[in-house]
Figure: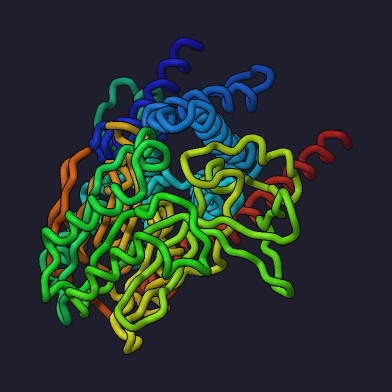
Length: 547
């Protein structure tokens, strides 16, 4: 019996992992991934053994540990400690949600318990998008990132709608499986399927068919329209470990990017995008106009006055007397005064002051230390990946870069920010007509990490119906259309400059207007569901005591 549970647990983890983009890319496996775990939970519920909850948690943890390890092992190339914490902690959270479902089902009943499982999981994913320990890489709805023809309806629901579909299909298939074995045990001679067995399968096929037909139709019939912009993105391919921050002169790096830019920019080019930390040092924000990089970019703009340039850099803000200090502000070691460090993007345009955006969604453990205001000792656990570490400052909301006429809004999305669907919609509500992702995906070597990061960007295009220009220092630079399709992409670990015309868009999708409504509903219902389970457990305990 125990060997069977071990095998089922391992099978569940493998089904999750091999469904994932850049791991197995067999996304249909996700519709079966919960079945082995649900079977373990069901059998334990019928066994008369001690510590059922702990044992179910153990098997769930093994499944999710395999899932997390096989899909995000590549974090090891940036930090072995970071990889260990991401895999261990995320597996813990996922297994805890499954155990809460097991506890709740025990008290509220089987049917209500399975329905509650949907709310619990969606609520967990929504929380994981919005709290201090946010790590959203394995949100279930991300699994379809490389098959965008199936999820054109994300313009209504975002990725949490994909998670909802996955959970519902798994539970319907599990219901059919349970009823099949119940019928077989009760009537071994009767092999004809009953309505109870067929109905969940019919509902599953209907649900998947409707999703596929709508999405395929939307994919075929969607037509981008309106104004176009000619965009150039560059990929300088500067090694982040050996060259970018330590081994290659700033001027040499800037000169390489200038040469790549001039190979593609012409009189028709509207935007030139350089990657995250393209300017490789840390710079004072009040000195932006005097940087070598700024001067070289201004020379390009002198030749092409219509050009706007977006680039990334590490910046530092000096607080003046009377300024309100941020929670991450730090005091000078010598002398008076305070400052803060940021991962930033700027836009340079002819005859206009430089626009600035500070990255708002920070990478846990590298740029953001969780609960720092309560546990200052956490600062010692930070991971240094070039530039500043130990906790960066952040903006409360994103910034859209507009031209001098306050038109043609471009969204400067820095690296990890592109993982957050609802956050990206804030750019669009502020007027962004084009998404510009600047990133540096070379920290993870030639592993699935940079491929997954690119794939997730395709979902942002569908959710917002915005074209995407993606400039990576190393990784894959690309253009993505409003249906999530890759129009053009560079190879891994090469110098490149590519050019395309992309449609701008002013329309707002349902998802842009209402965001993760699925998560908010689940976040409201899940605590009530747990409260109901707790009340029923207390009532039943009191009844037993009276007897």
